[in-house]
Image (tube, rainbow, N blue to C red; front, side):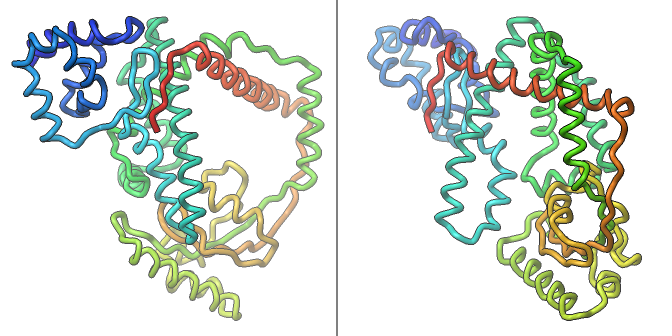
Length: 368
């Protein structure tokens, strides 16, 4: 197999534009973890070339491999690299699972098309950053990846069991999460070297940010909330999930009809704090709750019920027990946080502009 790969890489070099490094594509063809059918890439050019005719003895390897394995279609070419359908599906899997909650098939299809295209653009931008990293010799060690993952676990207060539950709910494997983390860290280091270190924040910008925060603080609330949780086991069918959601809806109606929320939580909730009436304590923005729950809580009024809300773990019925305002901090005490906020905002804008500029000068072919 290796001798054929080496022989046919010279074939590719003769029929593929010089800007595309044939050996990298051949390496991906030969990668049995992610096979790409040669006929979908260069077959017409190869068959018509003299070099291919001289290497016909090797051709059966690629044809038999293509027949034996599921094809991993190329969805984009980015300079000398390819983005495959499996990479795109890996990124969009959580979004596709969330879309199943949209009843209207036309609306679901429309959102899927838009978000799939957006995900492809995200992958193209990431690949351009990875290529810059290769040019600049930026690498990430296994130890750095593991430290990053452990940081996520610590931030969420998760153990290995909770991580596996989350991965199952998102249709991901630990290996896929590690690969995503490695890419994220590489991109972060590239952006830090080329962008973040060159950004500055002025005093005027900080004062403007503080005044904006004061305006927001007037409407900022602390929420004391409770929930009743219905777990959706990983691997549940659409019908099984629908039955769980229906059960949650029925219990929500019972609470709205006047039954005691705390008693219902003690009897039916499958989440932590069930014995305490589903109490979640004080909820604040960015406090660690899944974003779906956090957003829903802050939309409710004091004493109001809401749900069922789908999180990565299952369905939740919510109750806001109490709302209270927070006094805004002083400028001096919040200055450091404001500087980080302003710097992050400028960094995100600069990164978006930089990626768009790189796309204009790169060889990119989208195949969706």
